[in-house]
Length: 296
Image (tube, rainbow, N blue to C red; front, top):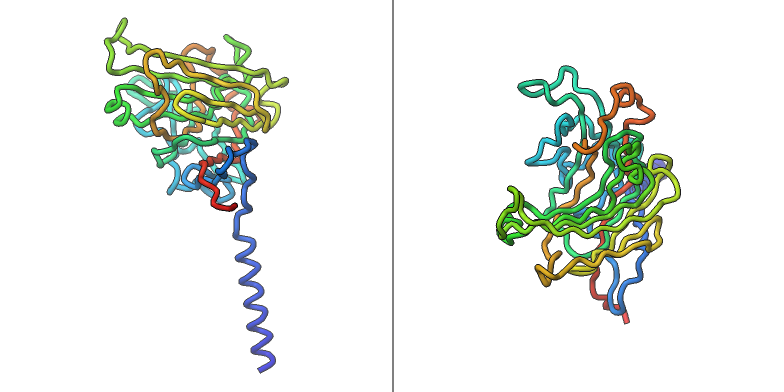
């Protein structure tokens, strides 16, 4: 009996230890004080610590559905990896090139949330950009069907940077945020729908590829966004309400994307093959919503 009790105790203790080890630590709250009577609650559908051995395919697409990328950079699942507590999006060479004319020769990467209903709240990632002339980004957009129904497409760029920017070098050392509203129910001008943009930028003080930084946004309401760098409020965007009294009132999905820009100098093949330069690292992505606090 004593041996059985001891064995049972060991088994129970081991199981308990495994259970404790398997639990994710609770992320800290946002660096934003919740309004009186409310509290911040983690929105699990759009949050990930990337602590597994592969991308969580219940939460994320390992590509960008409906968009291949911008020539010559093709989004491919192989560019997306989760390892050692990090999401890694690695730029590479496609050998052989793809497409009818071999126009796709750079492997780019993206993940997109399968959830499509991210609303007002706080969104944050901790990221270290690559050292290439490709983007390292964190942004939200409303789904195409919703945009067509609403007559407008909304895009909230929380951080958009380029580790080795050449044409506009400020992309190397700035926290660059932007808002885009495409009015799809208006007449096109030169083949394009009217777009209203409002952006903001803040000098980080070093290049975006030198270290990790946290980039956050409190999407307050249909026209106001506050942006946070490493936990400090650094800039605010107030979207124009001239065309629409509630310009940013659509639910959106989340994107972590590394792509080619047609206005930037293409990266050199030697740089693309350099593993010390070709990867953007995401430590986590977190989303929070405000809920009424019943504690009195």
